[in-house]
Length: 314
Image (cartoon, rainbow, N blue to C red; front, side, top):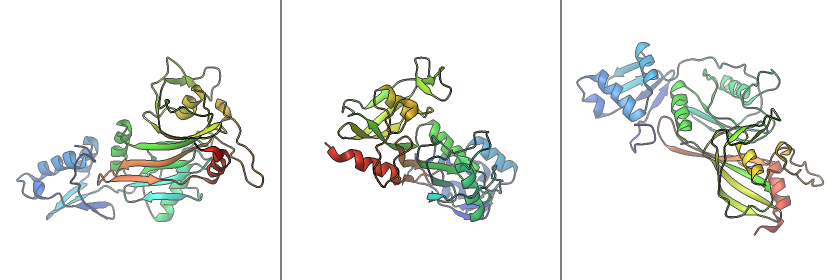
């Protein structure tokens, strides 16, 4: 059984590198404690076999009276150089971290060695907080897209959250401001996406591409523009941008995919990127299974564009 599938979830208290938890009678009353602990970890907690085997091998599972101690927080190097950058933390606990990614910042290095990435900033955040854990992002956003990014703070959390991503159990909702009045009939864009052989940095709808499904779950239709709320069933590169451009409604500011420039408002900085923001992230906590719904307020450039274009909401 995976985390999130049972109403009864284990509590736990972190003590340094260890998590202490009380599995209850299924373990305390068992004659073979080792077998009962393994079964409880697999069926109730959802611990992957590989991690369970490593913990057993390294004496990372200990039984003390009615308490189970698990070495879930071993000291780990960040895996990337910490570089300080102002970071907006949206949620943090012992297992996971959600931070806001600003426009113009990549999630991880691209090999060029240029620029501070979100991973660098997270490594610095861990260092400043006295955390000794590797930097593990669970998903990514385009460099110019703003929104929440989820990080796992230990191997257990990474395994559970990676599986949740594969199973499409992590929901990401985006706000997109696009050209044109999007009809109410357009609710799903189900078109495969592949590379554009004429432009190395672009993607396009292609019969030979990977399956890609974009759902429009909400909208406001203005005069000549629309605000869309979008959820993804797949996570292809540039998926929202490609799909919306393909159906004739490119994002404002998205010059790569034919989007219009944002209008200039005197005295205010116009939007200089694609008008796309991840406004909510929903997932089950990797240990407790509690449903977390993490919101990320709109950045100023998106709010300004909305104010300029929304004079005729209907």
